[in-house]
Image (tube, rainbow over all chains, first blue to last red):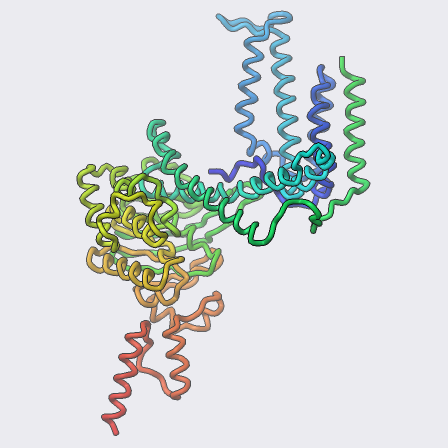
Length: 265
Length: 290
């Protein structure tokens, strides 16, 4: 059932986006998240959409797969869209039926917010889909490096992050296994009335927690045994390399910002 | 109860970049009352087959008949509980499915889900805990206070408590000590003979397959490549090597012995006892002949 989930998943590949340095991708995404909020009229939103589409194309990830995987998000999007349509009461009235009044501004805002949502979700998904969790944390660690001066345990934070990312698939597998074992014993969380489904959560969660704690303990022991003692003086096997493409990627953000600033009203 | 797989194909995550085909056109018939072993290398599709046996997975193509219920590819099924009650699965490391406060509650969890009365379920728990070789006092303990081996037995009792007609075992002895291993395997064999429990054993232990099974199916890269009785399968050494499988120790020993002696034994022996008896008989005949 989790086959279709693409949150936090990584699809190995060799596209332009895949080859970028994680540092530039991270800066790109963060910059993009801010830039999205510059858009405030139809041309700017069209530019944003086009740019996002370009990024998706360059990552060579199939659009239908992306949309399929983000279905839960799309439900959320539709919900916000409806909220805007029904509750923004500005501009001329364009539709009226019984108690439903839709105003032009409401429709406009609904569409804008949905696009903003879509664009943000797509671009951040592209980041995780094209960058292995390990590179993401490596990039994070380097980018947060300067904060070490303020006694922020950057290395430890990055390690925690990579460990948790590393264990997401493991825990998913585990969940699937335990779920099936309990289904075989007649307690099915995927079908039946809601009351039964809630009851079926306990037989799933207890074993999951037990094994997660056991795993954490094993991991801690294994690290201790191998003499792990934090990031000081630690060298890296994977070296990050900044290339011309990375500079180009960051420049594209600058260009987009300029265009948006020019077009916005 | 019998189970029949017809042209079953299965793919994980179909239609995504993660799509992985695990089974290709598998045909397998498991008659009532038989002891079927399914052997294969890691990643051969054994575990995927196993989950089709009580409709935890539904085939992408083909159909699975479980008793009088047929699961077709692409058709939505409702209420699979009757099927799941009749086919009990002991998963690999079944101790991971324990969750209740006491062993008793965990054992009665299965049967009560299938509508057995609490009283009856408790009765079953008391009988079963002895059957799996644990003292009755264990019933009041927390399953998490038990040793790994004891937890395994409790989990097995929990599946048996559903009184299934077919039991599917996925490497039931993985990680147990040799004695526990024999005890568990003997327990299932006894149940198979005494209660006519149709048993399906998924394993990579050739020894267990040779000793207990009356039919063996070999899986290789998602295909069911060989089926037959243990004698048929293990007299076919060359083919097994192709599937990266080995002969059971006893059979290998017999082959080496035959080579040393320069003659064939009258039959292929599948257990140590059988081989010892055959050799003894041969020696006796030889002595009497002189």
